[in-house]
Length: 190
Image 1 (cartoon, rainbow, N blue to C red):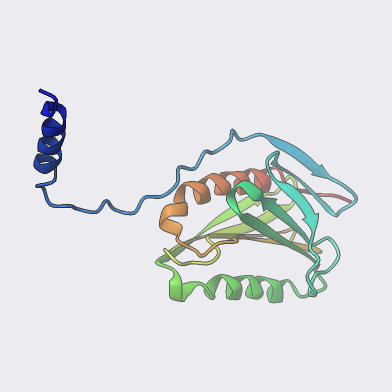
Image 2: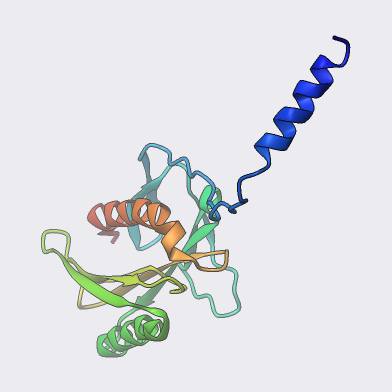
């Protein structure tokens, strides 16, 4: 009777170890997405827009930065939206071509690139968004806005991690909504 619990334990161990081991597929961390809430970016800059409360804006300090260039950081997602601004001086075509070139650099890693036109004649804001699909595309979303006469505004979303856009898709879609909101609330300051 004393050895009955030990015998039962040995019996359970022996019978439970007879099935083949099969490894589980690699899983990804669950991503908790906050509610979309926005605040106004309205300063002495030549543009204004609404951006998420869970994002921070800071000036671009890279060596190539020009006045009114900013970065919108999404720390919870390890992402940044790089924003550049240019004054147009009969060179709109050059800025449009530069934007297309920067998008087309992703072609080797992209499955598809779709573009969508944005028009807001009341605010004189016109532009295109580029959705770049592909597992290893470095920038899944880019856009530009212009008034077609004197101002050009461009943005590109990047993640500070090795791209694996299959697992990042929920975050990319979430941030696209924020960027689309920013574009829809965008206006030029005089």
